[in-house]
Length: 195
Image (cartoon, rainbow, N blue to C red):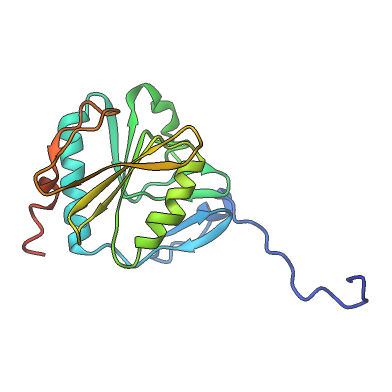
């Protein structure tokens, strides 16, 4: 009972943890846990999203496979007991493969890339960006099939991301932090004409 003699109008919900999330029955949908809240992800990715994701994964594997392990969604990235996300693409340096377990990737990957769609734009550019920065993911890429761009963000000393480059057209993507990466931005959008 509250101080005025009435029962509390609402009961604070308990935070969703990885264990709760892992025990969910498979209902055919994908979920993430952000700040202890269970979030339903958008419907399945579009053919355009899948095409761009596949091309980017191919380019990263072709150039960086000896230094990094590259993964694509769906794969749980367990940043804490109450923050479990499924980025589109991620890279983990081979010297840090101990964070890759049977449950997923348990800790911040070296790079996360999200391919935005109209329904995920705000989530990817605000909610996920804030979460990835808070847990120390050093570099975050936002790939936009609509504008055919790649935004490269780096985590700064203050713990926030700063936009350090915007790649478009014939620009070469050659990030300082990942010397193995080298491709023209147009290459990840080359198969979009038929989708």
